[in-house]
Length: 181
Image 1 (cartoon, rainbow, N blue to C red):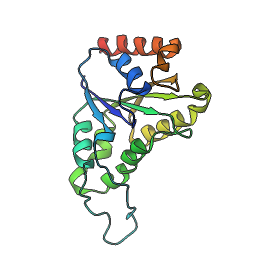
Image 2 (cartoon, rainbow, N blue to C red; image 1 turned 135 degrees about the vertical axis):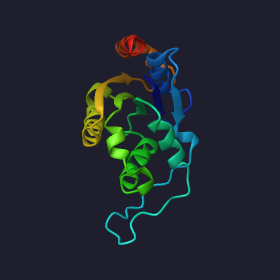
Image 3 (cartoon, one colour; image 1 turned 180 degrees about the horizontal axis):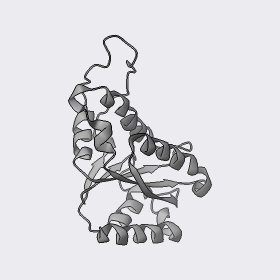
Image 4 (cartoon, rainbow, N blue to C red; image 1 turned 135 degrees about the horizontal axis):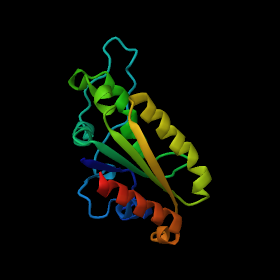
C-alpha cells in the first residue's frame, strides 16, 4: 500500500509535521508539502458556457502525485476550526478536476483510496477541531474515500506537540497500523 502525505502547514517542521512524522515513522511515504507549490485559487466556472480553463500552476503535478497512491494522509494545522488555506485551496480545486476531461475518472479513482487526517491546534483542539473532521468526513463521503481515522493534537509553540501524550500515543498506534498493511 503506497501512502502520500499532504502537508498543509506554512511552518516547516511545525507541530503538525512533527506529529505526522511520528505517525509514519520510517514508512516510505510521498511527502507533499503544499507550501512548496504554487496552487492558485479556484475560479468557479461550473456554470459558464466555456467552463473551467486550464490553470498554469503546480496543481496538476501535486494532484498527479497524490493519485499514484492508495492512501492519503491529510496533515493540517487547525485554522479557524478548519484546514489551512493551502489545504483548502488544494481541495477546492477538486471541483475543477471533476470537470476536466484530462481527469475524467477522478471521482471514481478517489473512491478506491483510504484517508486519514492529522490536525494540530492550540486552543481546545479536541473540541474545536471537530468541525474540521466533519468537513473532511463530508469531502471523503462525496468522493467515496474510506475515512480510516484521525488524530487531533494540541500544541501552540514549536515543539509543544511532545507535551500532548494522547496525540503522540495515537500517532504511534497509527504507525503500527500502517506497518501492518
